[in-house]
Image (cartoon, rainbow, N blue to C red):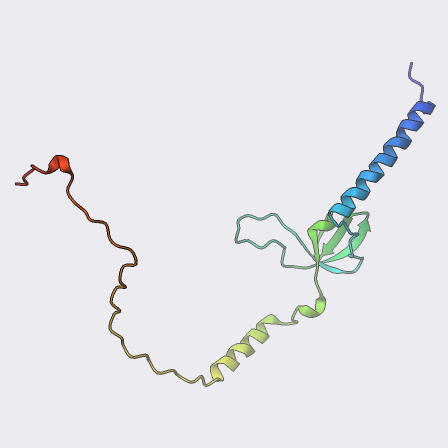
Length: 155
């Protein structure tokens, strides 16, 4: 019934045409959307994008990963006991030198420096009387009681 692994010249021609057309579409898409190959390489320190629980949550996991493998656009990264494999678009490269070695010590030093500063005190402003409301720019509407109630007398 079915011939195994035999192709006809028509099938070969269709595959060739299909490949040419797919390459054209890829070229157009890459040019249109400025697609570029990933600049990440093995050994880079990266942050991994995480699902957002609410609009105040961080877009990236704050603990960095190190890239251990690359297969096309799929990247495998590891930190301590966890390993993740994601598309390269979900990774963000970070520089190691930007991360302070001990952020808590630097914060304490900054706070101490702030306490030692002598900032000049500004004298309080004198109380000014409230400003008069500004004059109307346009004339106000003349308000009158409705005509159908002109003979109404309130009790």
